[in-house]
Length: 308
Image (cartoon, rainbow, N blue to C red; front, side, top):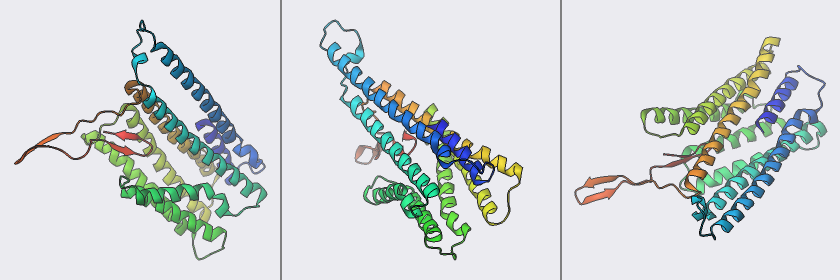
């Protein structure tokens, strides 16, 4: 998926900056569509391998002479964890595929409006806002990020679909830039917390946090440059080539970060067998005696997983 996204991002940026003005729209999105086909094949193979693993384990655990310790393990948590992760990735992949198809219909056919093209993003943003309001475990920053995305899409639709010329380009991209700034500070805060000992990241989570931080910073710089190009200063050839290099770099950094998180989740699955990790509470001595400190010592961060 990362390779297909990098190629499509490179072609789309080059087409947007008029470096390759004669490309077909379907050719630009073809690497992403091939990547989605590869993800579907991987899901099918993973379900098949998981079913074979569970059936073999059920057969071996009936034998008295088995020496494999995994044959005595309860596999229901592994099955639940694997299915949850597969369904989450499948929903994300399907949402991206639908969005890419709507983008193609919007640009090539010009038969739908921008608001209809953004339907998958509307659904995701609305679910994120409702989840932040209803679920008490969600941080206020998560709700704030989804609201910023919602405002950005509203301003963009008012400008494009309804022709509200009073809304300038800088006003439209302001929520998006603020969103990226908040996300960047969140990653930097987590990395700083790991350095001072407030957080305890695994090596894969630390690597993912660094890659995410670099990706969001470069994305913020790219949006500022594109906004200036769109409103004030046309790009020269050198700046156009630089933008064509930065766009796939952003996708590659985010993709490698996501791969690192997936690697960390896979290692936890093998280590704990799908069981929830035990986080003992710390004790504190008070006047009435010993008591446990509130909290379980772990926080769940999107795109990083559980952090101690």
